[in-house]
Amino acid sequence: MKFSLEAAASALGGLREKFGSVGGGAVRKSADGARILVGHTERAAPVVVILVIGVAAAAVGVSGLESLNQQGQLEDELAVEIQRLGQEAANLRDSIASLRQDPAAFEVHAKTYHHLVEPGEVVVLLQPPGPGASPRR
Image (cartoon, rainbow, N blue to C red; front, side, top):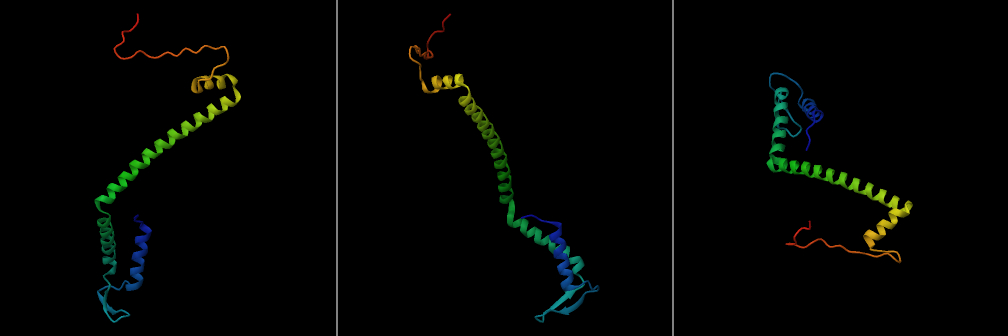
């Protein structure tokens, strides 16, 4: 819920149109016959607006502010994730372009990720030493 100065001014203007700005506490009858105190609306209207804002703030409460803060944090996290994914997408586009245009890059990719070899090549698989192995010197 956002408070705008224009909305408050419009509400005050509506009160002034309805009740007028007669001074001295005049009394007039409304359409349903009830008596309405007129003339104190210029001083009372800001108080009414402040009370309405206070009631709205109480309705939102602390949990609403915490929720707003959590939404802000989530928005920041998502912005970082979007930036990371954008960079990853750019890297993948570059990789695809190089695989389509550069035969050497295609060959390296095929050998590295798909374990493909050409006829006559010898493949030597090296495994890292296990735990407790002594380092070579």
